[in-house]
Length: 86
Image (cartoon, rainbow, N blue to C red; front, side, top):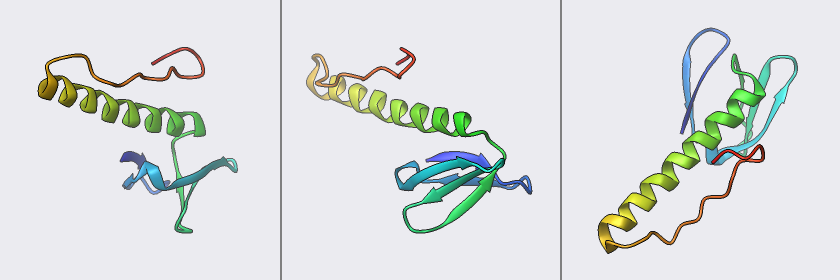
């Protein structure tokens, strides 16, 4: 889930797995797979970073759970961000 801000200032939490595309028109429009569209204050780049950060947090949680259960190394290899960040 990611938190974004509608143009009205209202906070909106979206399931990032349902994002089909994000466009700058010039306002950022998030289109979901169910046909819903949301115009938000965040830039396209900020939205992409929010999704990447959320998914990285999920993967870190999985890795921690695997370590706690198995006591060894997790069977998880994080892919790097296109600009080299993890």
